[in-house]
Image 1: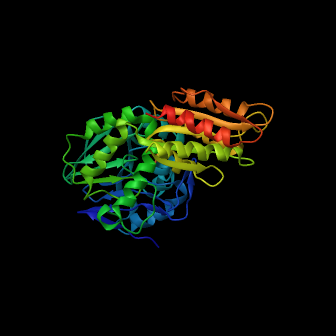
Image 2 (image 1 turned 90 degrees about the horizontal axis):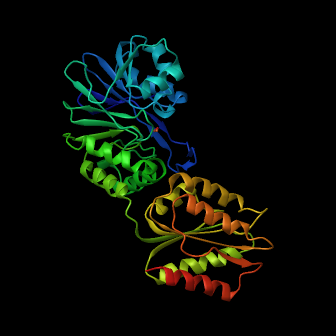
Image 3 (image 1 turned 60 degrees about the horizontal axis):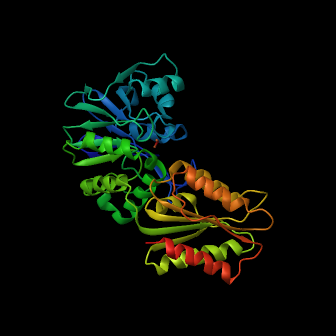
Length: 390
Ligand code: FEO
């Protein structure tokens, strides 16, 4: 049994809580996730976004707590990814009179591919306005935040920006607003979301921030997590800071190890950064989560990565990390590769190549150590990093 929550006058949260989901496309969600959807009770009843298809029962029950879904006139699809548009197919069965509002051309193309041509679509351009009674809803395209089809919906009457993925966080909570929870924790979740989802599209995100800059906003209602109403300017400022991509005086050391030789090199690298005064994190990939690591990598001026050679490549957890890094790596940073080997130093060399492909400068030679790491190897890597760090 699911109920709606009124978040503003005649606007209800009718989303779905994923209390026990832990992963989505490589991203760990230790506290679950939320697919937010919003129901506006105006002359034309309007739903903004849906949820994962598997959660449609929850969505429809929450809507039914307020109104018969058959009375919905518009379903606004700000973004066609399945966590927001997946329940459209179930919803149109109980809301057969609803037209689907989507961005043109990208949203329209994706939704037609998902749900066929024989739906009533209202394609909208950036700046288009839809009157639903007392409200004129404005659509602003925000391509690549986080797909080409993305848009946001703004209600000037309520001063609410329905921002979809932007400003979201993967977390499930019983509270809906930023001033009802530990906002420091929420900002940490928002940063992890940015680092793992939005970061490759910083330029586009800055354009989206500029596009909404002139709006009078009392509330940002994203499609994941907590709604911002007491920290609206704070989260916008944080997004601008994260988009600026300036590295901080920090370093991240990431390693996989087989018999601890590479681990000892990682520890030497870590000590070198610490002694230079850098805020430093050391991650063993056997027990660390790659999406947590990427949140630190986003800020780090230096990234040191180590693996022994295994089957003429890196160890499997390192392979996963390097794949993830290639898609998310920040630009203008320094990378360092190291690792032990038995008879072929292929693993660490592969790391150097991947760091370079990801856009890292690699001023040091790949640091390799044959068979067993001894004190002289640790000292040599320590000295090289110490000399490099300004
Ligand atoms: Fe929350 Fe890009 O979907």
